[in-house]
Image (tube, rainbow, N blue to C red; front, side):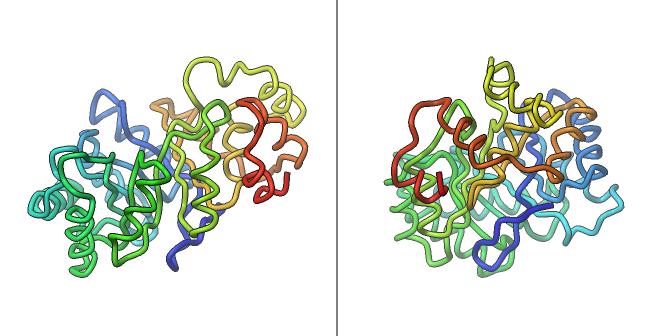
Length: 271
């Protein structure tokens, strides 16, 4: 396993996402496969319906709770101060846990000031119900705003990020400010895994296109990735990415698929 170190925490750089699965049986089978494969970072949310399955899977696995980094996220109608506190308590009940490692604002809210939501999240942190806090789907400007309103550091901004959907300005900010960028949909949608450049590099390494797409993310500073699959074979395959590395040239070729890199980010990535 590789780690992203931020706010004194070594976060497993490869996590497992639990959205978009239809049944608890499907979720628990996939999460069990993930934990057995070696994943120690699980991502859920109040709106996913997967918190109970995450909790049961961790309890049933041959792994201590303290070894698993668990993230959940506030639903859209749980941004006001009291709603943050109450809904997080309910999340902990659904998870069957005393705390979560990370609580995120799931997306920006135009109705409730971020300051109010973050004040409540800091209170939860002080009370030990969450260990860290962060945001999701925030722009560069919104991330900067969150930083000014939170007593505790913003541990991460979780956004869509992959070979076909780059986040140059945001990643530059995260590198500068020691914020983890957590990439959801790291394998993209549609034709990413059929991309000629991705497949060519995969063939060269005798790897799958998915493994190359994940490796591209993990070799960037401050980046974690949370692939998701209900197929246990894919779950295991996505974890098998720690015994090979892409060359600087290969990273550059993959980075150029979505257009030229921002000069500032290219410098930060030594490309």
